[in-house]
Amino acid sequence: MSRELGNLLRSHAQRTPSKPAFRFHGSDRPVEVGYAQLVDDLDHCLSSRQYGQPGELVFITSAIRYESITAYLACVLGHAIPAFLSPWTPRQDRNIHATEMQLLLERFHPNLLVDADGARRLHAQRNPALADHDGFLQFSSGTTSLKKGVLITLDKLDQQLASLGEALAITHQDKIASWLPLYHDMGLITSLFLPLYHGCTVDYLDPVEWSFRPDTLFDVIGQQASTLCWQPDFAFRHLCNFYRRADKPQPRNLSSLRALISCSEPCRASTFQEFQQAFRPFSLPDDCLQTSYAMAETVFAVSQSQTTVSGELAVRNDILSSGQPVAGCDVRIVNPVEEGVGAIQIRSPFLFDGYLNQATESIASDGWYNTGDLGSLAGGELFVVGRVDDTLVVNGKKIIAHQIEQHIGAQPGFKPGRIFCTVNADHSALVVYFEGDNSGTTTYPAVRKWVSTSSGVSLDRLVELPLGTLVKSSSGKIARKKTLAKLDALGSLVAS
Image: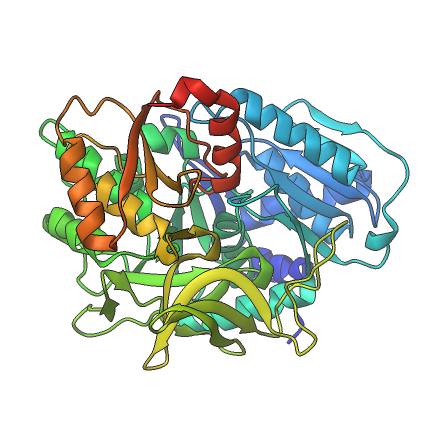
C-alpha cells in the first residue's frame, strides 16, 4: 500500500482546514496549528528550498518546536533525508552529549544542520548511498553503543503505519497526547507521522518540562479528551512517584483514554498494578493500559497488545505480554539463554534495509533480523525480557542484569533506573553500582542476601556513586558500554 504524505496532508487540509494538526503546550494558552496552515507553511519551505536539495542529509537539533517540525517535514516532502538529533538536557552529562554530537557530525557528514538559529550548510558533497533514497534517517537510542543511523524508506513507513493503524483501529477522531521527544522512534512515529497520516490532532508537551512536572500530561489529557498516548515503563513509575510526593494532588479526568501504551523492554506488571491503583480515582479506564514492542529498525511497532474486557494482559514473572505481532511481522526465539527465553528475531516488510555508513550483519540472508533483545513466545504473544547485552556470566551461570537492577531499585533508599550491575574482574561475583544517598536504609548484607537467594550468585561490592555518574541513552535507559567505560575511566574514584 503506497500513500504519499503530501497528498494526505492536502486532503486533510481541504476536508478540515481549521482542525489542529498540532497543539503546543507550555505557555498560558496552547498554540494551535491547523492543517491548512501546515500545508501553506510547507509549500513555502519547499519553494524556497531552505532545508536542502534532494539526496542531501539534513540534521535537525531542536526541542519540540513548530519550526523544527516543518523543517523536518519539508525535507521528507522535498526528498532530502532528515534526522532529528537529541538536544542537550539538564538530565544529561554535557560533555558526553557534546562528544556524541561531534562524533555524529564527523561520521555522517550532513549537508545541513538546522537548529534554533536556522539552517547552516556544513558540506557540499552528498553521500552516494543516499542518491536514490526516499525517506529519512532515524538514529537508534545508543543503549549499547554509538548511535546507528537507520535508513527508512517512505514505502516502509507506509506499511508500518498501516499495520499499526489497523492494530489500534485509529481514525481521524483520535487525539494524541505526547511529551515524547521526536528524535526517538516512539515519539517520531506515534506523535508525528501517525497523526498526520490519519488526520488526527497531537498535543505536544516539552519533554524536559514534563520530566519536572509529569502531571501536565494529565492536564492535557483531561482538557483535550485525548484518546491515545505512548510512553516507556519508567514514565508510568515517574507519574506514580510524583503524585505520591505531591501535597494534595489535583484530580484529573482520564476517562477519554482508550489506549495508554507502555512501549518498553520490558513492560512490567508491577508498574501497571501501581499505576492502576494510583489513578483509578482519576477515572482511568480499566482496559486502556496496553503494551507494545518496537524499534527503529522496523520503523516502529513489532507487536501491539489488544484491549480486553477485563483490562488484564498476560503476565510471566512480572513481565507483561507485549501483545501479538502486528500484521505482516513474524517473530521467533532462538539461542536460548534460560528455559523459554532466547534471542528475539523478526522478519517483516517494513524491516529497514541497513545502517548508513555501517555494515548490517544482524540481517541474515533469509531476512530474519537479530534484534539484540531477549524474550519468549507463549500463546502467540511476545514477552520481552531485556537486552542480550544484559546477560552476565558469573561463575558460568547466566543472569539477566536488569532483573537484579529492577529489584534493588525498588528497595527503600535506592532510585529506580539508577542501578547498574556488572561482574568483577574474575567473573566470580556481581558488582552493583547505585546513584544517590542510601543513608543505610537498605543494608549491604540485605542486598547481598537477596542477590544470593534470587540469582544464585554472590555480591562482591555495592558501590555508591554521585548522581549523574551512570550514562543514560536518549531513550532513558542505562547505556551499558558507555557506563562501563566511564566507570573504568574514573577508576579508583568509584572503588569501594
